[in-house]
Image (cartoon, rainbow, N blue to C red; front, side, top):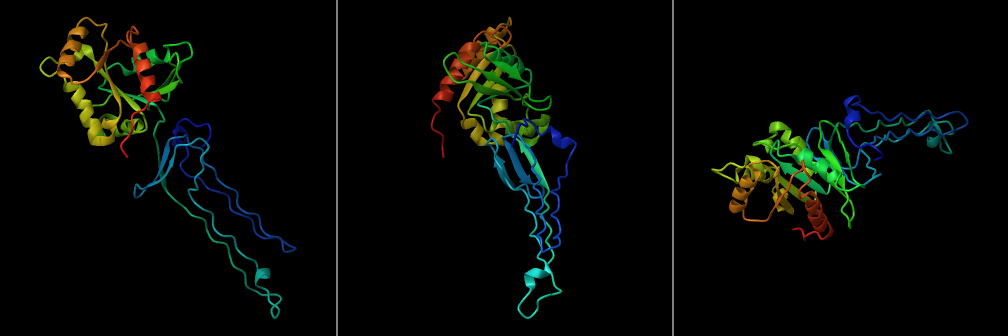
Length: 286
């Protein structure tokens, strides 16, 4: 794996061939071996059998190598079969064909923090705010069809990577709204930030937006609901947001944080809390 950050280059090339080896030459010279065909993919790429869906490789390390298909064994010329009684045998062993496989590649982002929430919860605005919270941070767009990455640098801690996961809707774990395409990106994250639009908290059921996303995470992979999470009530700068935040906090059994990605309110505190969790991760279940 080299400098690739996406699988975008596979849109234009789907087939890869390693060159054949060469035939033996005169003066009993051995033919040249075929060269390797090395396919560059970004860290976080999962390789599956296209027919069965079986995971064949999980390439999480930089510069990791995995042999997808082996070349065939080279042939042996008639000289290899000569004996004391048959100095010039008229038999040779031909080479064998190499392996051919059809594979499916999936990319799971290697991020420390995943932002989840309903559409329009303000995730993109928040990741931009987190990535400009100090002079040493910056936002790095992944692609228009995949999550955005931001790098946040706390004042007294190591930088960490945040993945902005596009909004989840009901049925996302079954693929609704491109749900499966994006849900897999948060499987590797260490911490989740559950973002709620405080201005859109329903009075009749304040926990509904929260429960919708939690149910999708649980249905896709129950382990996602076991990750450390910070529940953030976003857009607190809007007129009716404090009232919505209060309703949610009264119904919710756990700590919350009021923030505004637009104004920056509470963003530094969020970064500090995330850094504390990442530097002292809780023990994970085996």
